[in-house]
Each structure stands twice: as C-alpha cells, then as structure tokens.
Image (cartoon, rainbow, N blue to C red; front, side, top):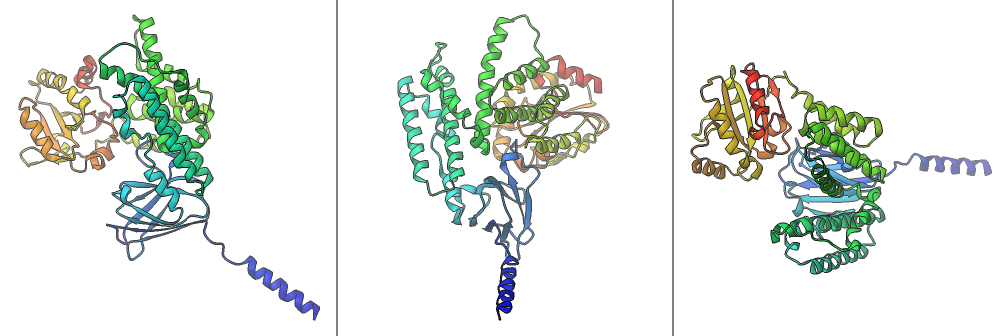
Length: 474
C-alpha cells in the first residue's frame, strides 16, 4: 500500500513538471487598418542607433481578423518598438510578466490605448512630457533667474510624477528618472546659446555651477538612460554641443591651420573617448560611426569605424552598424543607380532612367528645409555654368508631403530651372529608402552609364569640389 502511495506521488510530481510554462510576455494588438497579410516586427530599441529600425528581434503575422497574438518566452526589461508593415512604430516597455492589449491606429501612436499588465508603463512613457523638447523654444523668453527657477520647478514636478508611479516596474522607474535628468541637462545646454540669439547679444550668459552640473547628473545615470532612444539622442546632442565649443576655441587659436574631415573626425573621436562612462563612450562612438557611414564619406568611415570595432568589439550597436554599412555597399561607386520616379510640375511622369547617357546631379530637397533652400543660389550658378553642355542634367527631387507647397514654391521662383519632380511618400518614399536618405539636402551624382558616381556628392556651394567631380564624368 505504501509503495502504491509513493508511485502515485511520483506520477503527480512528473505531471507537474511537464506542465506548460506560461509565456513571460503576452501581447494582443487590435489595430486599425491591418489585415491577415499584415506583419508585426518587434525591435529591441536598446540596440538601435538611427531613425531607421534594423534587425528585428522577432516578427509575427496577423491572424484572420487582422489582430496580432504575441507570445515571448522571456525578454530583457527595456523599451521595444512595435512596427506594423514597416510603417511608424510605437514604443512599449516590456518585462517578464507583461500581459497587455494594444488597440487603435498604429499610424497615430499617441492615440493608442493600452490595457492589462504593462499598460501602466506604456501609458506613463507615452504621456511623460515634463521638460520635453516641445517647450524648449518658450524657455528662452525667461531671464536667467526665472529660467533656473522654472527649470527646477518643472524638474521637481517630474520627479513627483515618477515617484507617484511607484507601483510600476522598478527598472522602468529608474529609466524614466534618467530620461528626466537628460532633458534637464538639454535645457541647461540649450538656454545660453538660444538666449543670446534672442537678445542678439554676444554677451556670454553664465548659469550657476549648480545648474551646469545637471549634465554630470544625467551622465551618472547612463546605465539606466541608455536603454531609451531619447536619452541617447540627448547625450549625443550634449556631447556634440560641448565639442563644438572646443573646436571653435581650437580654430581661434590656430587660424592658419587647414581643416579637413579627417582632422574633424579625429578630434571628435578624441573628445568622445575622454568621457568617463564606458557605456556612454560606446554609444557616442557608435553614433559617430553611423554619421560617418551616412554622411561623411569613405575616408571618415575608415578612420572611425576601425577605431570603434577595435575598442568595442562586443558592442550592442555592432550589428546595427554592420547592417547599415551593408546597405550603403549597394550605393558604392560603380553600382547601378536605382530608379527614381516622380511627377513633373506639368503632371508628366519623370524617371531617372529617361536620362541614361547623361550625367545626372540629383538634389533631394523639400520646401520646408532651410539648408536646402540655402543652396539654391549656388545651384543656379552651377547649372548656368553648364548650360552649354547637353550631356548633364540637374534634377531636383522634392520629398515634400504637401504637393501644393512644392508647386507654389516653383511657381514663385520661375528662374529655378532644371528637371523638377515630386516624389510620393516623403520620408517613406522609395527614393529615401533606396538611397538611404535620412537628412536633406542630399546630392547624388550618376554617370552616363546609369551607375552611381558618388552617393554623397558635394553640395552646389562646395566650389571646385563639385565642379571637379562633374567634369571628371563629362
């Protein structure tokens, strides 16, 4: 009888051991404008560097109703991006134990609703606007003393909001405190320069040391803050602003020194490596590498990328940079130029391939872009110089979201000649995606064979730089 009892007990224990473990994270997404062909991608935002999301952690297809049922065995606590059909994404905070429903239009992330376990963190982060960049412009209206008072008052209000949310995930609370400290540091950095511009004065505006120390306070929370994309952007902004001051002082002390991109990159790297926090150095150097890949040219890439890989071979940003670099390889010199299509002011369709056999200087711009418009006087001069050459085309592709604004701009400037086209999709257009356009203006040179000559060509205002490159192709 005793042996039978032990056998039954053993069977019961084995049965318990075989019970299926509940998923650590469960999400249900009931989203508008989706169908059973829709795809949800989930990204770990702690590993993303730029505006483009790359290398999803996992992906899910919608069910027959267009909803998504997501189960994950475990996650590292942190911020994740939920992106449907490669469109605008929303940010959620995930940790083991989340069981949440997300409803609404994924294209209107601020209007999404959350319910269930994990909704508190998602809603708090979505609505936490204390010291956001939206009010940066207004703060420069205050004099120094009033600025300090209002900054400290807003910060204390934010701390109260965070402390009142003590029922939320404790790691999440630490992340939000780091974010608030970063925002406060950004205000401290922004105010003196913006105040000078407002007053049109060169008199230096000096804040108390206690206020200047806010940047150090934000850096001290890097371990928690670097999980948040906004914190990382602020830290990059603060480091760049501080470096610009150092660079200006160096230029004034060495007025006859000939500057070049390599000198700039080397000085920026050296400045970044002076940071005491290793995680912050890792991020800042990775971000500089991304900028070099995206904007600065092959020499800059070789200089900073090698240093980054040598110093941080196991960085969480390594895979992202490798993915970006691989995409840029398709835009290397000699690679076939991808098609560019748009609508001319007269309504006719225009294609890049229409001009095969000619050199094409492609200018990507928008009416709202000040630096783009600032190049137009030089662009007109450049085009005029080559007016006798029938084997070069100056093409201007607008990525405006407002077609009427583009049409009005061209109508008001009849001297702005060239091949003009309006590209549908703005930042999500095939032009921006195919040519890795993340900032404008952007200039691309295409040779007579329809191959890329320079995907990051010099600006019209670059003088001999752009003329030498054009002449070499004619």
